[in-house]
Amino acid sequence: MRRIFVLGAGLTLLGSAACGTRLPDSAFTSQNPAAPGAGSTAAASANPASDIGVTPASIKIGMIDSVDSLLGPDTFSGPMYGAQAFFKALNAAGGINGRQISFVTCDDQGVGGTDVSCAHTLIDQDKVFAFAGNSIFQYDGASYVSAKDVPDIGGEPISNAYDQYPHLYSIYGSDYPRDGKSIGWQGKLYSSTEAEHYAKTVLGAHVAGLVSYNQADSARYASYEAEALRKEGFTVVPEQLDIALADFDSAALDMKNKGVDVVFDTIDTDGNARLCKAIEDAGVPIKAKFTTVQSWDATVATTYKDAPKCRNLLYANSSDANYEDTSNPAVKAFRDAMAKYFPDRQGKLSEWEIDGWASAQWLTDAVASCGADVTRVCVEKFMNSGKPYDAHGIITPAQFDVKAPTGTTHACFDVAQWQDSANGGQGGWVTRVPDMDTNCYDVPQVAYSP
Image (cartoon, rainbow, N blue to C red):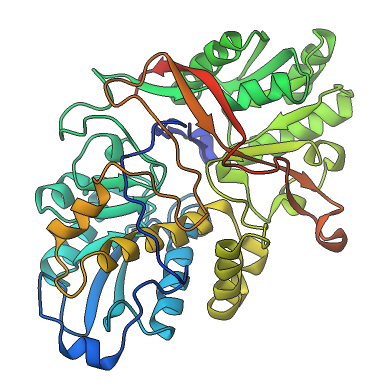
C-alpha cells in the first residue's frame, strides 16, 4: 500500500511501502487476538532466560516515538498508544507462555540526534529484546538498531529506513532488498495506483485536480501522483501553490473552470482544511477529496469545521481495517482496550493507533511461535517465513513479485469516507467496501525517487 505522509510546516515525507508488496511475513494463528499464547505461572517457571531482554517471567520491548515533536504531540504518537494498549491487555490475559511484556519508551522529539540516543539507550542500557509500535519522524538510529540485530517489528514507515535496513519490518511491508545500503530497487521506490483506480471505476471521476506546494518533497511526490493518475486514464489539472502564500481560492476556481471532479494533494493537514473550504466556497463539483491515511482519524469534524460539504467527501484508503468497524473482532478488541487503558484518546483515535496495535500483535505472534525458547533468531524466522500475515483481521495480506516491484500488482485495500451522520450524528469514518480482503485490483506500479 502506498503511503504518503504530508505534515505541517510544508514537510512532505514519502512513505515507501507499496500496496501489494507486503514483506513475506508469517501467518501464525492464535485463538485470542488480544492474548495469543497466554500462559500461567507454571509455564513461566519452565522458561529459560533465552536472549537479551528475555527472562523466565518477562520480555522487555522498546518503543521510540516522536511525541514532543515540532509537529505536535498527536502527529506521531498514535502507534505508541495502540501498541501499549495491546500489551496491557495481553498482560492482563496472562502474557505469552507465562511471560509478561514490559515496555520502555523513548521520545526522540522528532530530532535525528535524539533518535540515535534513544536507540543506544534502549539497546545498550535498557537491554530491550525488540521494538514494537515505533513511529519516528527522523529514524537516524535505524542503522544502529540493524547493526545490533534487534528486530523492529511493525514500525510506521515515515522515512525510508524500513526499505533500507535488515531487521526492520514496516507495518505495511516492504519487498525491497534492505541490504543496509541502497533504498528500494536500484535507488527507486514503487507505489501502486489502487486509490486512483477506485476514484475512476467506483466514483466515476475523470478529471483530477492535483494540489502541491513549491517545496521539494511536495513537488516530487506530486510528480509521482500525476503519473499515477495518468496511468489510470485521468486528465490531470496541476495546481502548485506557494508554500508561504498559498492561494487556495484561485486554485479552486481554476479547478472548477477546468472540470475537476476529484482532488488529490501532497500538502499538509492545515493546507487540506483550507483547500476544502476554498473548494466549497467556489462550488467545485467534486465527487471526492482524497486524503492520506495520516488524516484517517477522529479529529476531522474539528479540522474541517469550516467546510462541512467537503469534509463529507473525504476518502481515505489503507491496507488496514477501519478503526471504527467494531464488527471486526480484532477492531473491537482494540477499541475496548483503548477505552480501558487510554480513555482520554477516544476523540483522537486513528488508523495509526490500530497500526500500533497490529505491530504489537505481530511481535506477540512471532514470540509465541518460539514457545519457551524465545530468541531474536526465532522471531525473525517467523517474520521471514514467506507467508502472508493479517494481524488477526486488521491487515489485508497481499501478493507481490519478489524479484522487482515493477509492472502490475494485485492490490487489496480498505476504503472509508467521512460522514457527519455516522455514530449517531457525532461523525465518523464509514467503510465503503464490503470486504477489504476482496476489494482488489490489478494495477500498475509507478516508480519515484526516495
